Image 1 (tube, rainbow, N blue to C red):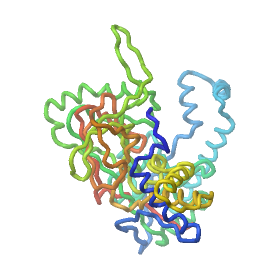
Image 2: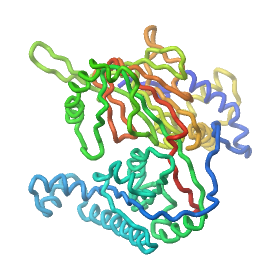
Image 3: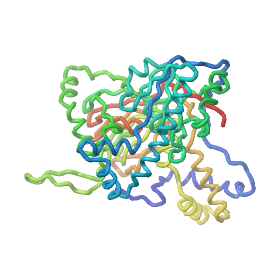
Amino acid sequence: MLVYPLGGMTRRSVVNLVNVGSRAAGLVYGSPLRPVHTSTCSTSSQAKAGFKPEKVAVVTKTTRYEFEQQRYRSAGLSEEDLKQLLALKGSSYSGLLERHNIHTTNVEHIVRSLRKEGIEVRLVKRGEYNEDVVHWADVIVSAGGDGTMILVASKVLSKDKPVVGVNTDPERSEGHLCLPVRYTHAFPEALQKLFNGEFRWLWRQRIRLHLEGTGISLAPVDLHEQQLSLEQHNQAHRITAMDSQQRTLNGTLSKPSLLPVRSLNEIFIGESLSSRVTRKILHTRVDLSLHRASYYEISVDDGPWEKQKSSGLSICTGTGSKAWSYNINKLTGQAVEEVLRIGQSVAGLEIPLDPKVIERVTEEYNRSLVFSPEDRRLLFSIREPIANRVFSNSQQRGFASRVCVRSRCWDACMVVDGGISFEFNDGAIATISMSEEDQLRTVVLEN
């Protein structure tokens, strides 16, 4: 992997930080911190009337305990064997079982509360969740954490279908996308607020994807359920490759195809494994630990195409700006201090570099990376771009309404919310955009 000084910052990042640094002294004396980016629209609304659904699907996560059971029971191992294997891996059997029981108890509480109100409930494991379940339900309750909420949202294509997230293990799961954690145990209270209209709707913007060209398959690979290794992931894509190529020759992929999935957090495009290059020397296959950059062309808002090489491309929503995108772009206090010291010497800036100033400047910079879930803009981020006389990088990060990417990769994929993967090799073109009809209807309750 390529290593860049100062946390991989570009010249643009340095300039931005120096500009922030010039205001640092003001921060120390109580000037209010404010986000740099604000929403361009506000579509959330206070519910004028409550609603009481007739049918609710409760989609539950697969706990780590259940996953390990499925993994080893298929090999004919007993529960005692499972305990020993987990101990060898440094995992606690009793700890996993305890978290599983906590989750199960909270799921039962949700189901019991719904049925007590005369609501028909269908309890669905995440592996059984499909379009038929979405069509049947008036409301879908995600019982798990943020990962379960993202999975549930991916199959809900209508903006009129509410999705409610309940964190079933608040001690171990952050649950940014779920109701406040107190409603995990006070779910009947949450229901009454919904019935009485004591909440507001939050319409989260989502990403839609069109694919066209060659080097693609419209058949997705589910990364969560299959828990695939890299080779298994590649094999799963290869299974449909010949069929994909035949359909391309027949002209069925000559026009953009809208994928039947929506992204709540982010899209990532890149080589499947950037740290490996496979070469065939004579008759021997050799795996070399070298950097394989992702090679593609990008057009932002119908602008000119730009050839790029990097460690991949992330495109996120306002919801996703708190997730992976934030961690890609955030700066540490150490990096901020080093840049401000350079600003002192180069630009003659008078900045007090005590820890309090460094902390507040870092917070303001990082806070500017987050924007509203209702914002109808995409935020693209180029990871570790390579810039030389062949490959350019005019902007490492920026907002857009539409991003087009043409793959020049050999073993790449496009991953939706970290859980669904599409083949994305040389000749494939992806158009990433937003549409008002793709908004996800969620609920906000006060704590």
